[in-house]
Image 1 (cartoon, rainbow over the protein chains, first blue to last red):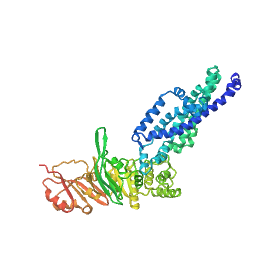
Image 2: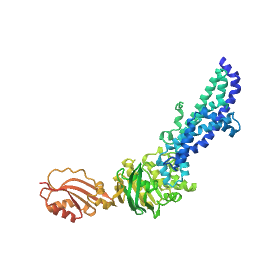
Image 3: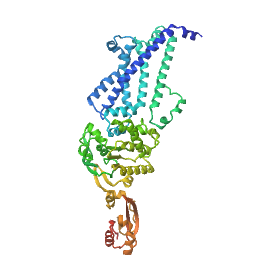
Image 4: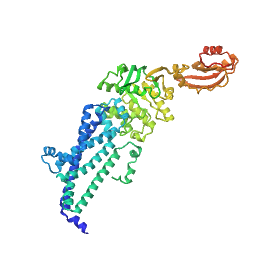
Amino acid sequence: MNFIDELMTNPALTNALPKALGETLLMVGVSGAFVLLIGLPLGIFLYTSAPGGLRPMRVTNRIVSDVIVNITRSIPFAILMIALIPVARAITGTSIGALAACVSLTIGTVPFFARLVETSLRDVSSGKIDAALVMGSTRLQIVAKVLVPEALPGLVAAFTTTLVTLVGYSAMAGLTGGGGLGQLAYNYGFQRFDTTVMLVTIVIMVILVQMIQWIGDASARRVDHRSAATAGAKKHRRHEPATAV
Amino acid sequence: MITVTDLRKVYRQGNREVVALDGVSLSVPKGSIHGIVGHSGAGKSTLVRCLTLLDSPTSGSVSINGAELSAARDADLRSARRRIGMIFQHANLMDSRTAAQNVAHPLELVKTPKAAIRSKVAELLKLVGLEGFENAYPSQLSGGQRQRVGIARALASDPDVLLCDEPTSALDPKTTDEILTLIHDLTQRLQLTVLVITHEMQVIKRICDSVSLLEAGRIVEHGPLRDVAADLGGRLSTTLLPLPPAETNGSGTVLEILYSGDSASEPVLTGAARAFGMDLNVLAGSVESLAGTQFGHLRIQLPTGADTASLSRHLTGQGVAVRVVQEETA
């Protein structure tokens, strides 16, 4: 019963853990919302401005695609995070805490999500776009009524993957003073050799990721009408084993 | 009506120029169905894309009911496109929309009131025989049903022109027949002008009033179905009324004859045989009813030493086209 007692009495778990979990959720939630808000339009832009796209813009597409997205994505997040500290301070007024971490989390993840959005949109068959064009759709109508709805299962899956990535990045952000579960694991688990805290943190992280993945998969299935199996058999799917991560 | 004048499309591939359309002109009168046949690579797909301005033609013009499409830009082009209903080989329905929502799609684009959309969609689904399938997603429908939704969607904006790009090429023979019947009925009922692009001769035989043969970006033969079928030795006639490859034994002259309409109802062949007192050997034949006219295309062999010239004259006199395929061998 030593371990159970430990769980109940260890101040790191009883006091610091709920606060850390809250910070992690805050970081993932806030930066997730911003990533969606910025990354979705950016991904749509990458797709539509590409050569042969709805509205090709050679130079702008090149700049956004190669310079911003690829360069940002080629810098490891740990380094990007430190490099962005001045930016975080300029935006949030502070360089420590969960909110400050959101800045680097958002900037670091937007290009990743935008690329996933672009890939999902590419999967929409050109025949559907042709059909919509012949109906007399404007470009905006094609984006709103064809591209996004038709790619929705892929977009939901892409956002799920992005949220899971954010959970991982938020733990890293904890190391530079962002707070959250990452900082908890580092301060107590690593620096104080508190194995229990380490273990509990890991378990919570795994559960968090599993839950995001599970909700994401379920939502993707709900909006997916592409095959008769998923369109007609929603109710029977409930008893299938959950998808492993 | 649809008028296409000297349409050209040249693609650049590296520093090589590929001429996909080399001066295509055609005109389809209101209320009729015109078929364009050709093998793959003949330029059919390019023609469809240029007709709807999905690709802009290098030169030439496309006009629908006198409205110039090739000169239109943006808003004008969009409103011009609304006068074209288009049916695709794979229907190209939105998977995220139900049958009813797919049909409603073109109406939503012009901000039609919800109630008007609802009644129009119900009417269209009834027109194509899909009552009760309003809430089915495309994945729950068969190929033929999907194509019916596609047709209903194409008609939603009350177009003047229906453009069909290989409408039945992905369907089985029975469904093909049903879809063709539907297109034919709708054309008559709604006084549509229809252009069907296909590689299937079956489609031409079943519904077209006139036909063009597209080859290497040019129209090499065209005319009313009845005329092109009656043109013995013509490319379209040969495909419309096909004969198996020649396989002759014996040394007599081999003729190909083509009769149609009135002469088809008379026993031309037995009449000739009786008049000349000779036995005629039918080697191959193809008899069909096209555009309401009976056509017969036969390959016959005459006995050795027969008077080919007077027999030909006799047949020609009765309105039968005659062509010598193989002279008598000594």
